[in-house]
Image: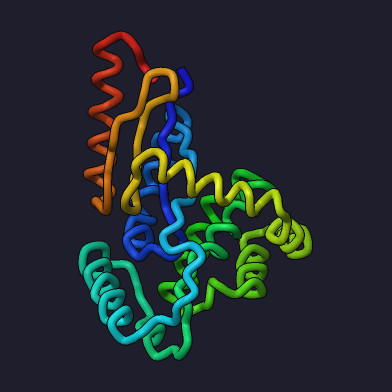
Length: 215
């Protein structure tokens, strides 16, 4: 029935960084029965305004909450930057470029971008930085740069944003399960610890087996 997990995420979403270990475990445990399809949500695509003091305070508060809830590392030196524009489109486009080159590299690049941005204070809005991070997970730098710059990749990135919007996704991370033929059910809207996510998926699979429609 082509059942799958659809993961809506953004490389510059702190709660997605907190959720990173959980989705990795879920993909390893359930991936054969429920392949994970990654859709880039577009948290703040196309933003042009420089991050002001109010935005710094708000974002820092999110980071502190994520660190407390998930235990993930953060480099708070980020907030010492001047003139930073929190545009999430370049990082999203980088993941789409990786997906176009090799679908199996999309999730590893998302994870690498998360770590680089949150734990290493890397500027993942910078094309050269993105090319280096793509190379670090085994992609050819020149091929990645060509894919990143292509109109097809930009169109596909915007298509991902539209899919998320049309699906009514209002926050990240969001994880849903099901198929286009039978419809989807929400597993998680927002951050939850991995064991909770695994239990919810197991419950969904058990219900299908009881109904005689296993995944």
